[in-house]
Structure formats: structure tokens, C-alpha cells
Image 1 (cartoon, rainbow, N blue to C red):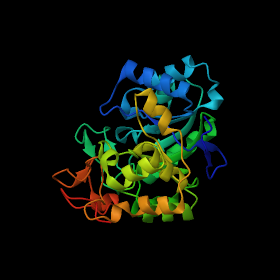
Image 2 (image 1 turned 45 degrees about the vertical axis):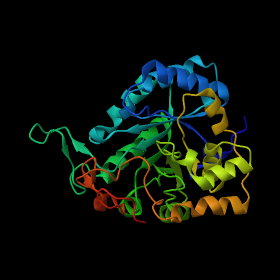
Image 3 (image 1 turned 90 degrees about the horizontal axis):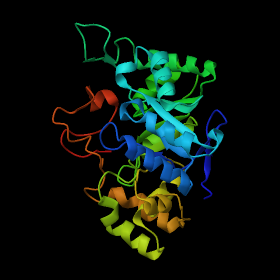
Length: 316
């Protein structure tokens, strides 16, 4: 399967479609191993996991058991919020669990850290100005590049607001910013901002976490027109507009379809581009707007730089 690649701002190349390894809850064990093995056999060469996912060991074992040269597989993992004060140690923990010699891409999973150093503040979510700030944490990630054990670093869940704080302070511009991104949440402003700085947007939950796109009339009509699946329409749209989706599926048929990209016409692209403009369609599809206190992992939407109403949908 010939999957297009994106060239990142450090010159490395990343397959444009990857397999997301979040199973809905931490863990997954043998299910994750079987999923990754099946995906690699289908032609996937990009696997995306995280310390939080609790399955790095099984992703790594699949890579080793696949028989595919390590250099042919692009591997991403992430630093979790409770580890912002021990970046080097957390990275080494992930490397050991994965059982590989290096990681292709290491991401700062969220900008907000959680203080686990002080007993008095155990479990306390850090305010943006508290130490370690995400600037300090990212600077520690920059040092990892000198070890040769990671090729590329980036961020996840960063907004224009948080990037504008980080970028003037960092020595290495993040190669990627991984965010929720799909036709209902195209992140157009963030995409333009990142593209102007040569930061690639990676799309997590590119199909949502429901059957929304499988049933949405515009997507269904395009799928029928092109004799494809709705997921192929959405993922092809994502790649064609210059973003890298990482869908998750345990079904081999859907896995194969998800990396069988289509060439969408300008008219087809415009139809998908306009989907979020339908009243009620501009929204998150993973429920981050349903938190009653208006926070995500302890930060308000305002602090995160997200334009989102409490209990409502994303506004812009």
C-alpha cells in the first residue's frame, strides 16, 4: 500500500495516515498487540501511542514481532501530564516499555502539568505560570534530541494561544501539533497558523468516536458517488488538505479501507469543507465540551485557548 508521506520541518518524513492506539480506556494488552500486528500486515507504517494509553509494551512487541525493519515504521508516543517534572525519566520509561532503540516522534501530550512532587499538592493541576511550565517541560524535551533516542519532538492539544506562548521561547519548533480534527472541527484558524510556521497538524479522532460520519448525508452521498466508505471520504479529505489523520480500528477490512486514499475533486473537497457550517455541525465529537465545570484535565477552555461553551458545542 503506497501511503503518502509528509516531510516535517526537521526534514524527517511521516506517513500521512497512522493507526491510533487509544482503546477508549488505558490498556488493551493483547487486543492492542493484535490490532497493531494486523495493521502492519495491512500496510500501516505509522503507529501512535502514549504513556497514558497503558499499552506501549504491546505496541512495541508488535513492531518487533512483525518482521518489518524498525526503520520502516514510524512510532509516536507522548509525555503525560503527571510527568512534566521528569521528562528524561518518563521518556526512558516509554522507551523501555516499547522495547525499541529510538522513538520517531515524542509529543507533549497536553500543555497542563500535574504536580506530583509535593505531598501537600499531590495531584494538583498546575496553573500556566506554575513550575514546571509547559515551556520548561518542552525545553527538557528539546534536550532529548541530543541523545539520538528520539528523532523529532512536537506537541498535542495546543491552541494558537498556547503556541504563541511557547514558540518565542523554544529552540526547536514543534514538528507537529496533534489535535482533534475532522470535518465537524476543521480547525481552520489553527491550521493556517501552524502552516505559516511549518508545523504539521495531526488529526486524532479523525472519524469522531461515534457513527456520525457514517450517517451524515453529505459524506454518505460522496461515498456512494465514489463507491467508497464514508471513512475513506473523511480520511482522504484530511490528507488532501495537508493534515495527518490517525484513525483507530480493530477490523481488518476497515483498516485496509482507511489507508486506501481517494483523490477528491475540488467540488468534493468543498462539500466536505462546508460540512461544519451546517447549523449544529461545528462541534467536538469526543465529548470534551460536556464537562460540567468547563475544564479539561484541570484547565478551563479559556486557559487552553479553546473557544468552547460549557456543556455546548465548539463555537468557532
